[in-house]
Image 1: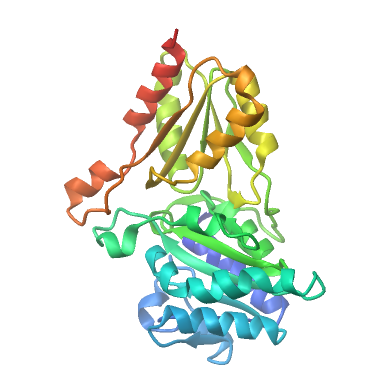
Image 2: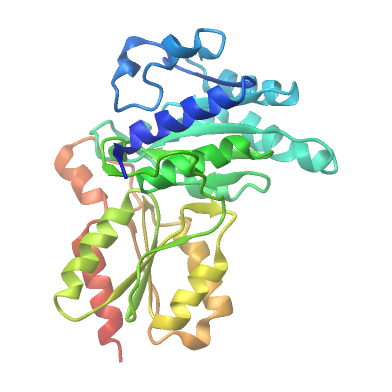
Length: 328
């Protein structure tokens, strides 16, 4: 199985889908300029191969990009638009939340509105708070939107292809630190369904539920804990909406302990939704109070040392797991 970075896997998915269906086009700020020809980036070479009719550079206006996507979807096209940084979702949210998410509902399910909004996400670049805040919980809170956050190159390719083929609007968050992370990607047609979570590591003692870049942090912690005889089961949600409650509950009922790990700030973060599901439906199986390991409730610092403090690390996960195992 060939090794691709996540950026290359996303590029492969876009190429395959644009070749398969000529109603698909991409648009965004700079998607066709030379800086995006870095072969590790998702839109590398697409302008050259598909031309300006299907690879459209846009003005620096997230509201206009989102409006373009909604209008194109209504007209029968399949737009895949890019929002350059996660916090800029706020500028696009009127068209996405008040229109894209509601149009199929308002049609009584008679119409489809296939569009994908790719959003670059995550801290770690020293880019400051205006570019690094993770807002996936905002998107997941909006009925009518599907929300995808892959952690591996294979899942990124398979989920993006599924998102493009979906008749509903999909918000597709891509952690920029993962663009350069390699992994095995199946050759040929590779689809990953939107919705099911994936058990990335089986274990019997503690469940860690996570997604996106924090999967790597969970693995680091699990490997350290394994040397001490503690077996962690890692559940990679992959999609937040729809949420695979069954996978979460099955794992927690097996281990009796839960840690939810995400990079976004703590208050109102999606860990709270996962925690609520477990408390409502598997409380009697818990051996200890669940734990959340998240970013702190502060804007993401631009200073590299302070940014490292902000991003959850394996040590915090190890501490949380040990607290649960020793509880009582």
